[in-house]
Image (cartoon, one colour):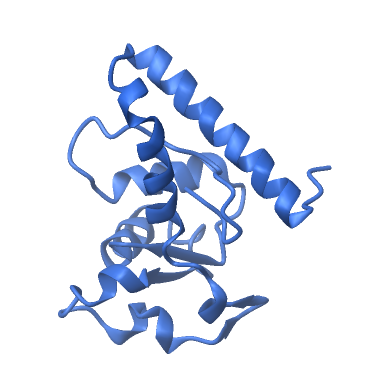
Length: 147
């Protein structure tokens, strides 16, 4: 899970098929207050999943399908299309890089060969270390203060 600036907040290893439960658990477990905007490849299902379980927590959250996957969501409401929105509170939805997760996954491919031969605990440690260094680089690029 990444912020709009490309900083990794959390990651998980999927032990089963991808479901809305995984991002839901990260959002609930990581944040005291729900994000204003969630961009996800299956935001329509995630939105429903979140509202069925924690409606008060997510009542002010805008869920959008990322631009790459929107074309495949032929049965979804246009309300899930990022391009339908401008400002949402203090966030300009049009300026969000909806491909940040895909870009991060592409970065992980550089170390895929090394990770493939590790035990799960070493895999998790090295993946977390790689993402931590990427976060430091991003922090320095953006001059974010982590006070």
